[in-house]
Length: 485
Image (tube, rainbow, N blue to C red; front, side, top):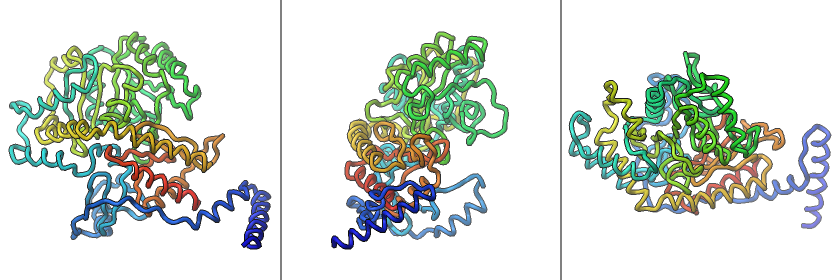
């Protein structure tokens, strides 16, 4: 055995010498580790006492063919071999063969309570049996009961709710209300942000990946307070000075408001990348905006509803109270639902004309939203997000110490990001490596999202019922995949 080890080390040294001559830096120790790691076993998914129903639907090939023929050409999918998900339970989903996957993406941070949570399902079915839709022109207690429960989670004078069908709708409405309330048109947003794909929200979004060449006016994009890639590191107040400069030099000195995500999330091939704003940024930026006559909008579409663990709402981590809060995704655990919550004074601007949303606040969706709030409280999902998320972040940080490919681990609770780079000093995005890792992890039973402007960030936003064994399995699978690269 000793002779064999000596021979292997000699070969590795020779190979390392040749690699270095051709510009490839890799140590003998790293190569030796990789030899040993190839012998490690693929991690096993935690046990789960549920058997999916037999699938008798169309094949993956048939679904792909229909998508190509009948659906938008703008649609795309993850993975080299697209995944056909036919059933979900709690933090797991199943494909057409019955294979189980750990869902660490949560339908883009949307599945808050868990897939097909029985209390949410029962609430929807019960409401459907009574009445699926009427209109807010008639009375129904479901919408008002949910509104009352929702505002009880928010601080200050945030007491009036407008229900919508999505986060884009919510942000569109919030920006319009800010402009009506202040009488100003200019809005300050952040570079690297995403707020939706409609007219006003596309203007507020600050990434070319998500902006079509249409008229977008009245929005000024401030320097992004990114502690990892930002020019001022973690100094939030320095970043906030750019908001002051934008107002002074790019507007009349008065603005409608500021809109920002509490944690910049991400959608598929871009946007955000789970970026926590530099400490102290929001208090300073909010103060500057309010002194310029504007209102402050917190986009909580992805960071709200206990996902960050430390607080129910993401903005609370910076100790601020917005004037308007927008929300969607986790509010309904997958049911199409969004909301804008603001003060009675700001809410009054919509009474100047007729404002109406046909499906916003319909009984079925608001019944689901109310059930989500109950489940988060009853099952202590905020506490679980903190406990499991803290453990998961610690383990991911340990992986960062082990693999140079990991440039940064960030986020809080069950809203985490892992950024991959080929050079830590230059922070060169590892785009192809990220895609490869993502595909390899899927093959081992773990689904993660991908984001960041360069598409080099794993976004980990699982259902809040994620467990410690789930977290360990995710990291073990990532470790195994990285060891093969």
